[in-house]
Length: 436
Ligand code: NDP
Image 1 (spheres, rainbow, N blue to C red):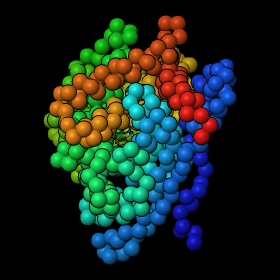
Image 2 (image 1 turned 60 degrees about the vertical axis):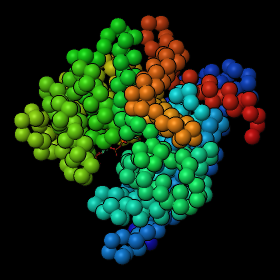
Image 3 (image 1 turned 180 degrees about the vertical axis):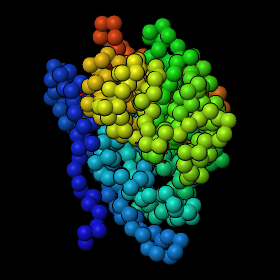
Image 4 (image 1 turned 120 degrees about the horizontal axis):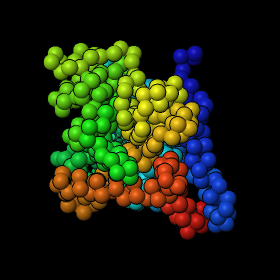
């Protein structure tokens, strides 16, 4: 019995996310009679429902395996539930409640009709064969299928759930529903996916950073940029930043940091992508790439202008934020969801370092998922150039809304701006739809 996982645990990560929003929006809610009467934040802090289910599957040795999975449907007040699925041993209800809550705000900021949800499982795909991953995805979808659909809840990818896993999940959903509809996004191009979905979060992050810099009359060319992570978001942000003339000095994983003092080439970033896809480490970079690997090191020790945490939640602690301050970083934009601890956020704020929260700066992925949903329902697909242009427009509009809400004298408080702009859209919809 002592080996049985504890799924109940605490909900500290969820509370951290709610507190962050509450600090900004509660003063406004209290002074607005309609919002106050509707108790908007109290309602948003309670997910509509939390589905929790057992997933049982057979591994390659014929042994029965059991995992737990969840779907947190937080709010569908402005559109169908929408948010990714994560497969990782650290997944639990606390993490998914936090991510689903954040997703409501992020999706509201895109301006698209998308509600908020998140899901996933404590399944660890590391060391599993493709056939095992496929069987796991099929077993998970057997349980989840009755609760999703194109106008109901539209899951997508997240950590360890990429195009391949979405393919297995979509195949299983299609068989269950006996329909060919867009019940998932992040699909392959041969069966209803959108161009640019894979690149969208990382590219969108750089478009957002360019808007932040242009507020100061500056641009990204020549800026030294530290990026953490080596996954989808990190590597696409690195490729786009390098294409725009930035000097990308790092990528990283849980074992350490890959560093190139005078900037990573596109070839080296693509090597990192290939290593990640093959489940291999990045500690032995190709000779001639100019890269060194610092085992156990973090990118925040490096001397840079811009820091982009793109790995996971709470990866950047207060001590690391002090390193950024000591190294005179002037801008931090989140590619991951809530990658900064609360004390790291405080340190940046006290030192007047511009900081964009993920709900604003990493919204490019879900925005292109929204475009995938409309392309699928119209059965008309856009070219990569068209999607990229739409993505850039969405990130620029989103930046404008957040900056307008967050402007405070000569500076912009992006965190408050994002919380307030999203809150107003959600609150107006909640008030309009009555007590339900
Ligand atoms: P991936 O699974 O593609 O990559 C995540 C990578 O981060 C892994 O390679 C992992 O390394 C590394 N990592 C985990 N923890 C740390 C750490 N503490 N320090 C350094 N590296 C670490 O995930 P994504 O790129 O898709 O997602 C990254 C983040 O972005 C998540 O917070 C996700 O929620 C968020 N996000 C993703 C979107 C998307 O479209 N994919 C959209 C919006 C947000 P290792 O291999 O060693 O485990």
